[in-house]
Length: 236
Image (cartoon, rainbow, N blue to C red; front, side, top):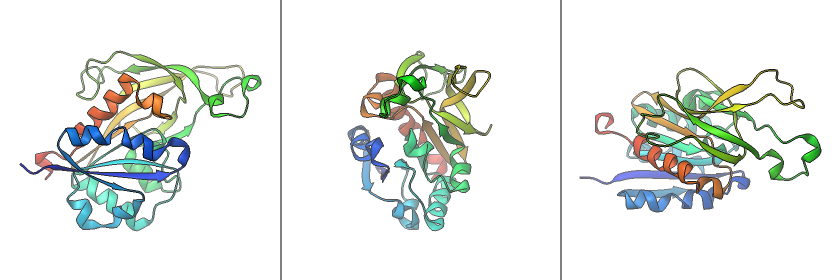
């Protein structure tokens, strides 16, 4: 049987530690029989032959820009069956200027609410809030998340704008706070999948820092998500 081919694409804003973060998961891929190629830019998406033989793309590229040709190559590959996955800003806050990318992924980071203004000191921790990741009914039985219990984090809590073509496996709720402008609790998807053509997309929004990615539940979701998103025989 031919080995599965995984393409790890990393770059963008260095605050999300794209090299160190992806290096956490490359051994898992190799241990599960993947041949892994690592690229430091999205230029590879424009290589039609390479994308055609790729079974899984793991992307960690926060913000940044992508050309129309590169995005078209990524989109065509997913439609043809290539899996696409990532975590936090590396997939949910990529290529903000591209509506077509948003259409592919199905959800986009809008903000991460912060602490009470008087408690902020100009550091990343200003946006670290305790919150719960709660699994949906679907999430309690889905192969990516089955058997996992709701869990607590103190890190960035993503507020996500999304459509209803995503299948939500877990959510997180932003409560009403006296110093914020919203007037009722807002629930955002925290983990979701999306079918796009013959391809599978998996987005895990926790993952701001290496310690969050090493949280047992977060790491399990990311790793299972990579396996689940990978091209299936029926998509070959």
